[in-house]
Image 1 (cartoon, rainbow over the protein chains, first blue to last red):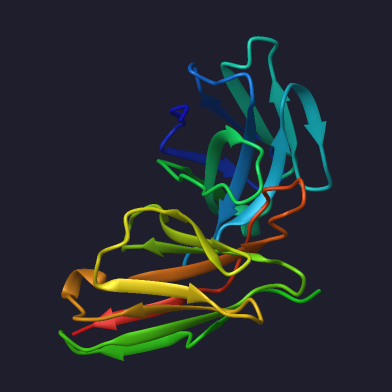
Image 2: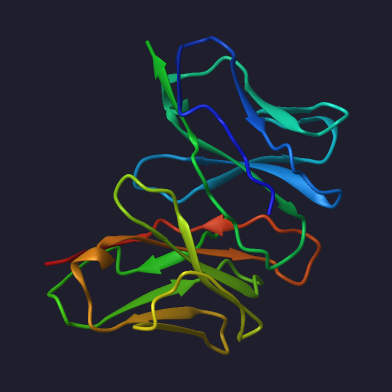
Length: 111
Length: 114
């Protein structure tokens, strides 16, 4: 299982763009990169998933360089409600696979 | 859209008692996962079921057992409760057999062991 490293915490202000970089040097060929968001006392919520280059949905963008040893989650124009813990997970995109959460990034959005 | 349902939402037990947590997956989801999240910790995988069979097992104590029923709901049974079992227990579901691994989490059950 590829190990991931991401910042422990980040502060931002409303309306700013937040970029969280995750390192995964040992990512395998079949591995995908997935990000989950978790609010206090709530279950994690899927944000975005990608394999290479760039993926965008209505919530975020995911940038993955050619070597895939890192990835960056970009949250555009954050609001106070984006304050949460963000987890980067790396693993095969296979149905039934457990999620291994480790050391997410606590993002605090200030007014 | 329908979400994962967990019951009860809160549970208080004494040491050495037993507890049963229930999970009702999203309709047409056949895979269920259980996670435990202690205070200030990350969610830890416990066990999963696909089509009523155990599909994977994580750091689940021997005092815990779980099963998935014919209607795909799942129950986590916890016996001889210890203070350290106090945590949030999340259930998640996914379409399983289809080519996606996105898991949808329930609101969790907060278990407090006194």
